[in-house]
Every structure is written in structure tokens, then in C-alpha cells.
Image 1 (cartoon, helix red, strand yellow):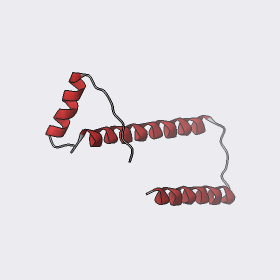
Image 2: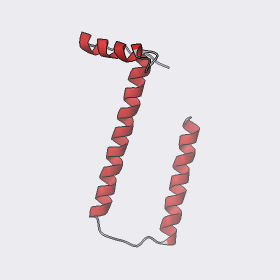
Image 3: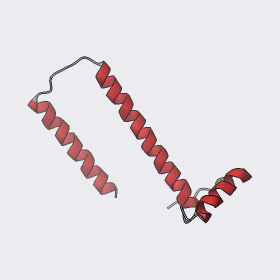
Image 4: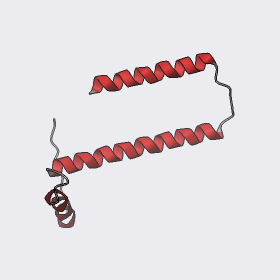
Length: 86
């Protein structure tokens, strides 16, 4: 794991210290990692929503059995890749 140093103004440092003091996080690093994960999740949700809206505004089309098969294969491949990353 690589490290990164950050600078915070006093009020933000006090806030982070308060989160740790409340027992919600064991360290500032854990708190920052959690914030980054939450931001990643939020951005992924925004991308999904944009794609869904794009699909809803596009022309309608019928999905064939081959389409469903391709979708299933792609989803399974992504699931396998995600498992390998862990």
C-alpha cells in the first residue's frame, strides 16, 4: 500500500479527529479511504443513471435471445474479473 500526505485546515483536521474520537474510524487513513470509496460509488451510480436515462430516451428495440445471451456472458465476465481483483 502506498502512502499519501495531505494538508488540512485546522477545522477539517479537528473534524477528522472528532470522527476518530467517536470511534467511527480507527485512523485518519481509514476515514479518508471510506470517503474515497463513497465517492467512487457515487460516481458509478451517476454513470449508471446517465446510461439508464440515455437508454430510456433512445429508440425502442426488441431484445432477441442472442442479445440476452450476450448480456449474460458480459455480466458473468465482469463478475469473474471483479472476483479476481479481490
